Amino acid sequence: MRRIIQIFIGLLYTATISAQTLEECQILAREHYPEIRQYDLVSQTEQYNLSNASRAWIPQIALSGQATWQSATPTYPDVLSGILKANGVDMAGIRKDQYKVAIDLTQNIWDGGKSKADKAIAKADANEEQSRLNVSLYELQSRIENIYFGILLLDERTAQTEALIKVLESNLARMRSYCNNGTATQADVDAIEAEMLSAKQTLGQIEASRSSYRKMLEIFIGTSLKDEKLSRPALPIIGSRTSARPELELFNAQEKKIDAQRKAINSSVMPKFYAFAQGFYGYPGMDMFKSMVDGDWSLNAMVGIKMAWNINGFYTKKNNLHKLNIAQQQVGVQRDIFLFNSEIQTTKDDGEITRLIKAINDDSRIVELRRNVRIAAESKFKNGVIDVTDLLQKITDETNSQQNKSTHEIELLQASYRLKHTLNQ
Image 1 (cartoon, rainbow, N blue to C red):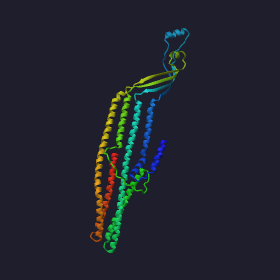
Image 2: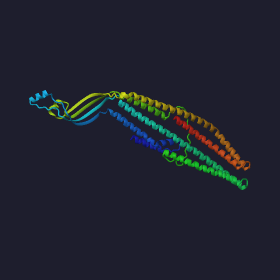
Image 3: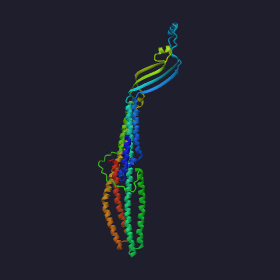
Image 4: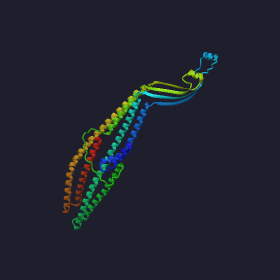
């Protein structure tokens, strides 16, 4: 019931997300990703393994039955048999056909720590699998970020290209007017119209790529974006450069599993103590003399305590422990490699962020200057100082500066979120 309520609440929460922000898309992608269902399966497996380990303390019951024939059985000594016969008593002894229906009951008293070690391994296995799932789902965030920022870049390129088309359309209308007045040639009109058509062609290509990216994001999040415009996320605040990635939790889980396996090896060479009880109905019974006399089936019982110590484990214990030590060292090497690569990536991201911040500081002024140059060029063309090629170049320069500014801003966001992802801040 509790599980059903949790699922219901999760569905309600998911239904309220509109998928317009990066965080909302990441939440939806995580909930929709098929691998999320593995968490419940890992939890169920853990419970079954723990239950199996606990059952080692449940009394073990075994039923058995047998019918045998043997070539020889206990008999009376010849002297005693002669005396009995002399007194008119004929006792044949134990028959060669024998029968038994038995029940055996065994109860652990001390198993050398095996059941405790089995529980520790079950928990460590589940913890490792959950940590591995955390790593996989954490990488999903990076994939969503790449698609999301790709869409934002294409949105900006779309906006800048549309703005370029508007400028070209305005100049085309003005050029046609100049042509009608004889102050411009048809070639000037054609040049601007060709540039405008080229810009529209570019816009079509950008929109096709944008549509493809949005469809990929819709597959990940499991819902339609419709015509909703994705919002530009705020610049993240990143403090400490200490990594808190789920991969480190996975390495810790692997080491804990190795520790549990080490305890299991140590427990395998310990003696084990049991209480037992046995009862059987059959022939012959425990009272052999009685069975020699009457040959009837009888009820018999026995209880006691026994010890079992299998020393075969000592032959391989040392090698098995050495293997676990090597495995632990391998985990340590993998952790060091991961931290090394994370440090390299962090340094690279820091450098990229610094570069982009410097570029953005200059972009606004560049855009302003390019706009002034373009406006002046339009005036110069009207007065016949420059030709249409120079005018188009100034328009292109302004468009490129605006596009560079928008691109640098989104690249700064992407680099900052990549650093955030690298550190899991």
